[in-house]
Image 1: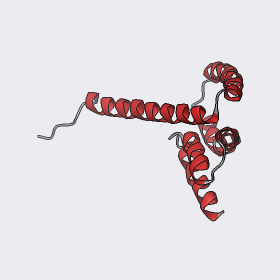
Image 2: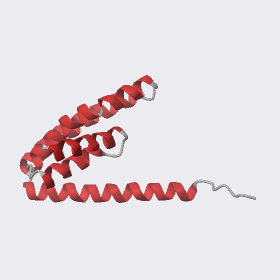
Image 3: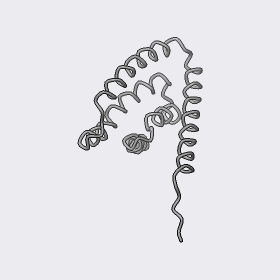
Length: 128
């Protein structure tokens, strides 16, 4: 139980920093607590709402949130959540777990590629 609380706290910190803690939490629940994939995803939705609350407050206080972007993303998020919920009731849990793993690997590779391409394109300071 203590391990779960500590892991949840650390994942919430990563989520607040924008690292993608939600995906990490699903992996943690599925691998270390033997929670079924569908249940882990449902718990993750609640976890994300609460763990990201403080980050939203900070961004609001710094006026870093665009209202039109939020409304657009919320609309597509609701549509995607409904479609995903319907699909998850039809797709076998083993296939769903594999698809989720593939999505994590692909998004991780894309994130790494973006990070490295930004470092290469940024001007380096030469001494001398």
